[in-house]
Image 1 (cartoon, rainbow, N blue to C red):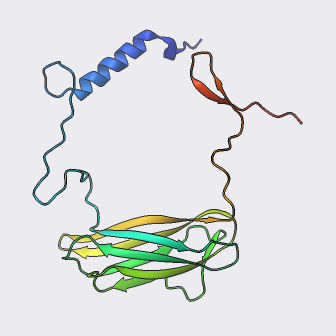
Image 2 (image 1 turned 45 degrees about the horizontal axis):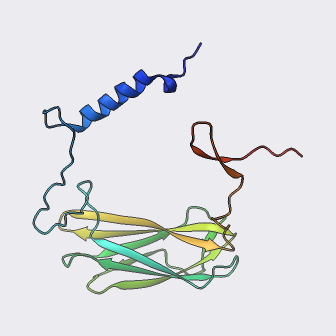
Image 3 (image 1 turned 30 degrees about the horizontal axis):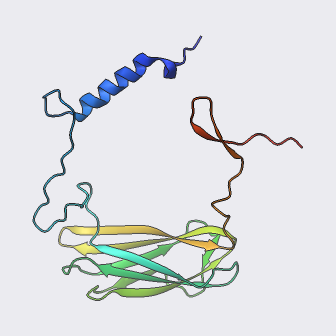
Length: 188
Protein backbone atom coordinates (compact mmCIF):
# COMPACT_ATOMS: atom_id res chain seq x y z
CA UNK A 1 0.00 0.00 0.00
CA UNK A 2 1.38 3.41 -0.97
CA UNK A 3 0.98 6.53 1.14
CA UNK A 4 0.44 9.89 -0.49
CA UNK A 5 3.52 11.78 0.71
CA UNK A 6 2.29 15.07 -0.77
CA UNK A 7 -0.45 15.28 1.87
CA UNK A 8 1.99 14.61 4.73
CA UNK A 9 2.84 17.92 6.48
CA UNK A 10 6.10 16.47 7.79
CA UNK A 11 7.43 16.26 4.22
CA UNK A 12 6.81 19.99 3.70
CA UNK A 13 8.44 20.93 7.02
CA UNK A 14 11.57 18.89 6.23
CA UNK A 15 11.75 20.35 2.71
CA UNK A 16 11.39 23.92 4.02
CA UNK A 17 14.11 23.40 6.64
CA UNK A 18 16.43 21.84 4.05
CA UNK A 19 15.95 24.72 1.63
CA UNK A 20 16.48 27.29 4.37
CA UNK A 21 19.64 25.55 5.57
CA UNK A 22 21.08 25.28 2.06
CA UNK A 23 20.59 28.97 1.41
CA UNK A 24 22.24 30.13 4.65
CA UNK A 25 26.01 29.96 4.39
CA UNK A 26 26.64 32.64 7.00
CA UNK A 27 26.47 30.20 9.89
CA UNK A 28 24.30 32.63 11.87
CA UNK A 29 21.16 30.57 11.62
CA UNK A 30 19.28 33.66 10.45
CA UNK A 31 17.40 34.06 7.19
CA UNK A 32 19.40 33.45 4.04
CA UNK A 33 20.28 36.48 1.97
CA UNK A 34 21.70 36.66 -1.51
CA UNK A 35 24.22 39.33 -2.31
CA UNK A 36 25.40 40.03 -5.83
CA UNK A 37 29.17 39.83 -6.19
CA UNK A 38 30.91 43.09 -6.98
CA UNK A 39 31.72 43.57 -10.65
CA UNK A 40 35.33 43.18 -11.66
CA UNK A 41 37.06 45.96 -13.56
CA UNK A 42 35.86 45.97 -17.17
CA UNK A 43 32.97 43.59 -16.43
CA UNK A 44 29.34 44.50 -15.98
CA UNK A 45 27.48 43.36 -12.86
CA UNK A 46 24.97 41.46 -15.02
CA UNK A 47 27.60 39.19 -16.58
CA UNK A 48 27.02 35.53 -15.84
CA UNK A 49 29.62 34.03 -13.51
CA UNK A 50 29.35 30.73 -15.42
CA UNK A 51 31.06 29.61 -18.58
CA UNK A 52 32.49 32.50 -20.61
CA UNK A 53 30.64 33.37 -23.80
CA UNK A 54 32.19 34.10 -27.19
CA UNK A 55 32.70 37.87 -27.62
CA UNK A 56 30.40 38.09 -30.63
CA UNK A 57 26.70 38.61 -31.22
CA UNK A 58 24.47 37.08 -33.88
CA UNK A 59 21.31 38.85 -35.08
CA UNK A 60 18.95 37.87 -37.88
CA UNK A 61 16.03 39.12 -39.95
CA UNK A 62 13.70 36.89 -41.98
CA UNK A 63 12.84 38.79 -45.15
CA UNK A 64 9.29 38.42 -46.46
CA UNK A 65 6.70 35.78 -45.64
CA UNK A 66 8.05 32.22 -45.84
CA UNK A 67 6.01 29.99 -48.20
CA UNK A 68 6.41 26.24 -48.74
CA UNK A 69 8.53 25.50 -51.83
CA UNK A 70 9.77 29.07 -52.34
CA UNK A 71 13.17 30.40 -51.23
CA UNK A 72 13.18 32.70 -48.24
CA UNK A 73 16.06 35.08 -47.54
CA UNK A 74 17.46 35.65 -44.06
CA UNK A 75 19.98 38.35 -43.20
CA UNK A 76 22.41 37.12 -40.55
CA UNK A 77 24.55 39.78 -38.88
CA UNK A 78 27.65 38.81 -36.91
CA UNK A 79 29.29 41.51 -34.75
CA UNK A 80 32.28 41.57 -32.45
CA UNK A 81 31.78 42.76 -28.90
CA UNK A 82 35.55 43.26 -28.46
CA UNK A 83 38.24 44.74 -30.72
CA UNK A 84 40.95 42.08 -30.29
CA UNK A 85 39.34 39.22 -32.23
CA UNK A 86 40.88 37.13 -34.96
CA UNK A 87 39.03 35.45 -37.81
CA UNK A 88 35.47 34.15 -37.44
CA UNK A 89 34.04 31.05 -39.11
CA UNK A 90 30.24 31.16 -39.52
CA UNK A 91 28.48 27.83 -40.19
CA UNK A 92 24.86 27.16 -41.08
CA UNK A 93 23.15 23.79 -40.64
CA UNK A 94 19.69 22.25 -40.87
CA UNK A 95 18.75 19.30 -38.66
CA UNK A 96 15.60 18.21 -40.53
CA UNK A 97 16.05 18.02 -44.32
CA UNK A 98 12.39 17.01 -44.71
CA UNK A 99 11.37 20.42 -43.33
CA UNK A 100 13.95 22.82 -44.75
CA UNK A 101 16.63 22.81 -47.46
CA UNK A 102 19.38 25.20 -48.41
CA UNK A 103 18.76 26.94 -51.72
CA UNK A 104 21.02 25.59 -54.46
CA UNK A 105 24.43 27.24 -54.33
CA UNK A 106 24.01 28.42 -50.72
CA UNK A 107 27.31 28.60 -48.86
CA UNK A 108 27.06 26.67 -45.57
CA UNK A 109 30.37 27.83 -44.08
CA UNK A 110 32.21 31.13 -44.48
CA UNK A 111 35.33 32.58 -42.90
CA UNK A 112 35.38 36.27 -42.08
CA UNK A 113 38.91 37.66 -41.67
CA UNK A 114 37.92 40.56 -39.41
CA UNK A 115 34.81 41.78 -37.62
CA UNK A 116 35.88 45.42 -37.29
CA UNK A 117 32.52 46.35 -38.81
CA UNK A 118 29.36 44.25 -38.51
CA UNK A 119 29.30 41.55 -41.16
CA UNK A 120 25.97 40.69 -42.81
CA UNK A 121 25.50 37.51 -44.83
CA UNK A 122 22.32 36.62 -46.67
CA UNK A 123 21.18 33.05 -46.25
CA UNK A 124 18.60 31.42 -48.55
CA UNK A 125 16.55 28.36 -47.57
CA UNK A 126 13.52 26.61 -49.04
CA UNK A 127 10.78 25.47 -46.61
CA UNK A 128 9.40 22.00 -47.37
CA UNK A 129 6.40 22.14 -45.03
CA UNK A 130 4.41 24.52 -42.85
CA UNK A 131 5.16 25.09 -39.19
CA UNK A 132 8.04 26.45 -37.16
CA UNK A 133 11.34 25.46 -38.76
CA UNK A 134 14.87 26.16 -37.57
CA UNK A 135 18.28 26.95 -39.05
CA UNK A 136 21.30 26.56 -36.78
CA UNK A 137 24.00 29.24 -36.88
CA UNK A 138 27.39 28.84 -35.21
CA UNK A 139 30.18 31.40 -35.16
CA UNK A 140 33.64 30.27 -34.06
CA UNK A 141 36.08 33.03 -33.17
CA UNK A 142 39.78 32.96 -32.36
CA UNK A 143 40.63 34.89 -29.18
CA UNK A 144 43.80 35.27 -27.15
CA UNK A 145 42.43 32.57 -24.85
CA UNK A 146 41.68 30.14 -27.67
CA UNK A 147 38.73 29.23 -29.84
CA UNK A 148 35.19 30.15 -28.68
CA UNK A 149 31.83 29.35 -30.29
CA UNK A 150 28.47 31.14 -30.14
CA UNK A 151 25.47 29.19 -31.50
CA UNK A 152 21.79 29.91 -31.96
CA UNK A 153 18.75 28.58 -33.81
CA UNK A 154 16.86 30.92 -36.14
CA UNK A 155 13.11 30.17 -36.11
CA UNK A 156 11.16 30.51 -39.35
CA UNK A 157 7.36 30.43 -39.20
CA UNK A 158 6.02 28.98 -42.45
CA UNK A 159 2.29 29.28 -43.11
CA UNK A 160 -0.30 30.45 -40.65
CA UNK A 161 0.51 29.98 -36.98
CA UNK A 162 -2.17 28.79 -34.58
CA UNK A 163 -3.75 31.54 -32.50
CA UNK A 164 -1.99 31.35 -29.10
CA UNK A 165 -4.93 33.00 -27.33
CA UNK A 166 -7.29 30.19 -28.37
CA UNK A 167 -7.01 27.19 -26.07
CA UNK A 168 -8.57 23.79 -26.14
CA UNK A 169 -10.65 22.86 -23.15
CA UNK A 170 -12.10 25.09 -20.49
CA UNK A 171 -10.44 26.92 -17.59
CA UNK A 172 -11.93 25.80 -14.26
CA UNK A 173 -11.11 26.05 -10.59
CA UNK A 174 -10.03 22.77 -9.00
CA UNK A 175 -11.12 21.49 -5.57
CA UNK A 176 -8.10 23.09 -3.86
CA UNK A 177 -8.66 26.49 -5.50
CA UNK A 178 -6.00 25.98 -8.18
CA UNK A 179 -6.86 27.11 -11.72
CA UNK A 180 -6.71 24.19 -14.17
CA UNK A 181 -7.52 23.66 -17.83
CA UNK A 182 -10.18 20.98 -18.16
CA UNK A 183 -9.81 18.89 -21.31
CA UNK A 184 -12.43 16.13 -21.20
CA UNK A 185 -12.12 13.21 -23.60
CA UNK A 186 -14.25 13.37 -26.75
CA UNK A 187 -16.48 10.44 -27.54
CA UNK A 188 -17.25 9.76 -31.20
